[in-house]
Image 1: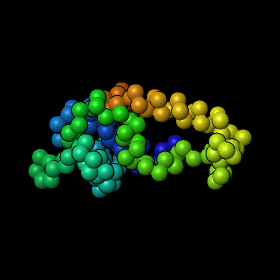
Image 2: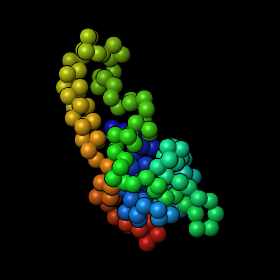
Image 3: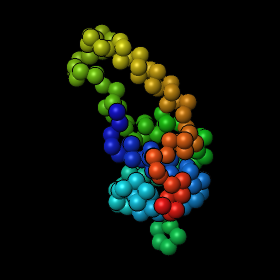
Length: 144
């Protein structure tokens, strides 16, 4: 449903939340746990640092850490930062003119689905991500 970068960001955040707010985790540790390069992890997490939810520290003992209280950031807020164009919310069959005024055959059902999805994303927070660690991923990426 989401762009690959958003999915990877969510998985990375699950690992960071599991480590605890303020704990520093290197991009390479996250990358190793998720099968990704450290450079890609860094690229994916940068928008959250710009938002002030995370910080990165270079050098020995550096890495990524959560600044925001995990319970205070909803997944709806996170998705709005990572996917501002909401490509996933467009017409399911690709009609450019699909709207309430000129609906496609699936418009009403998709609109209800998106409304339900939005309500759920408003209720889930970063703290909830810990429950959704990738299968086999260690809670402590360094412990792998």
